[in-house]
Length: 310
Image (cartoon, rainbow, N blue to C red; front, side, top):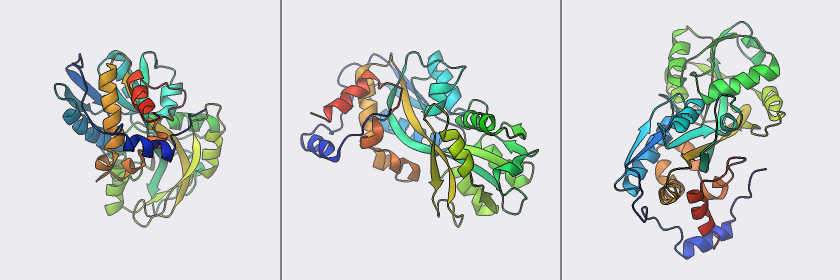
């Protein structure tokens, strides 16, 4: 069960007492580099991750902060496990379920926003429903991505058969525009740059996934919820039923508490700055930040959220 979000009264009281004021880590952080694993070209993970890294570089003087592009969720877990990254973005389903990753030694900074599963096809093509994918050439995301993970679950619960292709968002969009791909899935925040750019020069359609969302929501993990991509998200495209899963910012547990406390403060108080030209980040907020499901908060993050309740 997800923790109860903080109340509006709690946040107002905390703000009035100065507990939300920004500051950098109070002591020598004990580390000299902080790597944040993000996502691939054209992905929301990469855009938001890069913005967070820029803010952290200012909030953590003396620590070299950099964003590391990746295939996204599953690869990010491996980067954390290996120590290549100290922070990473990942969808909750991949963290909790992936059979080839271990979350030992990894905890949450907080919940950021939800990712929506998109199924994108050419507007003039024959694919109008999920069932029309049978026998088609379909990108399921880059190897090690959250898209690949959720589509594997989707294929398992539906029994759908098609020819899978492993391409990241940008590559998928380019292949669809070139006619070498029949469709592509992508699990991402909205709007996602790769689809926004594609829609500017290629007529596309989003395929409804209402029944498939219900099938995924019926899995015992509880990390999938039916949702709708709103109208106007991508130009004139109509609203489209689909499924969402939460995204978390993760940290290795061996990152010092003072550092993670500063990371938490920066991400949640600077959310309006992150969202200035990244609309997806408007969904980052303190009230839902502690709702990290079965992934416990890092002790540094917990310390910051606890201060809000005093």
